[in-house]
Length: 340
Ligand SMILES: [Zn+2]
Image (cartoon, rainbow, N blue to C red; front, top):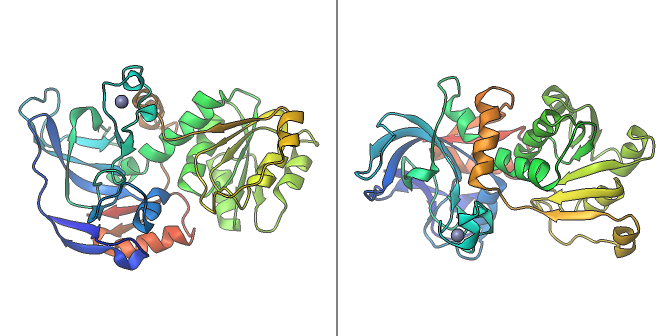
């Protein structure tokens, strides 16, 4: 089959469109023909080099396609079914997994990170990862859902327990995870302030439901938050930008407010004034992906049309380098998708 692989870590130029051996599914696995695979910042980090990534490597965590082959031990799935794949990989028998907290498992990873992913034509996975999708959802839309909606759900619903009336500041509303966060915060009845880097992304953030927007290049985030909240500050800050915005994010919180973060796109060397942390009684929460149960919970809202996947642009798989560059330059609004 064709795949995009890299044999060394580096820039987009290391990505090679080439022939690789077809996967050989086990009797307890499902073989899926990949129709769409969405990019995440994780793909860029993996390409640049993360510990535990074996070379050559195939990227790609967010996968949608058709079932091509069903293993002998599998029941309930049929060849031809349209599906998306839960990206989580875990042991399934440790104390965390049996509690349903797969993202705490010591062996936890995602497709395309610790194991090969979906930047290819076929992938073999266990049945538990295979989730049928409704006919209204396109493959590109389905592939745009798992990682970002699961992550944003775990952060806002499970960890922050967002409730009606809360004011939520979403950093980078134009990113995949930001566009999911705006919609989930609104679904929970919160009011949303979204930041973005250009007018187009600010407009699109408002279309997704943001009540207020801030241009994070031209305006000082905490000053604008003060104006919008009559000096009170926000209940929740949804962070993933990291170093470039972290101090402004902390400054935007009201006393007792929660900051939840799932990433550090601009760098991880953030400063925190501990006096502010204890005197304002802030809560800092770290988040990594989510659980299988949470994925099914958020998918119900996607399948019913309440939460909408945001597809930015699609590229043929062989143009993976151009797709990586688009994400690297933050040119996208929503998800960049590859089509094998
Ligand atoms: Zn486990």
